Length: 137
Image (cartoon, rainbow, N blue to C red):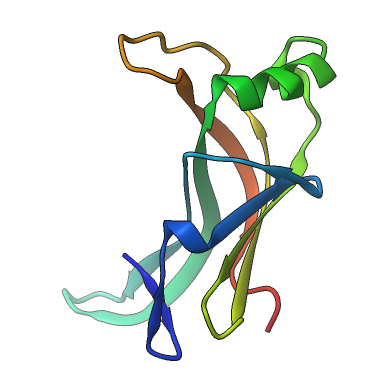
């Protein structure tokens, strides 16, 4: 799915990501927000109202090994020990329209994925505590 502004679609070439203000080259990032909804019933089979419930968040990021090692070093080798941090994802198009999303998260997984492909990378699951979309409105 792409974001379209001024008839120009934002794509992966338009994205920059920052972890606590430090630029990070990422391969892939996925994040979403979900809110519970429920139908309310009286003593019949049809709903008469609805209610909103809790919000939940999910996120993951794929980072090349040469980019994650400095973060591991700063964490004393244990990514899961890092305190919650802010990830800002900025999309910019050729008209300089910027969309910034903010994620508050921490690493919930650490590991390696070694394959025969060139360039080692790993998808890290994040424990996402908050996600704000288009915060620069």
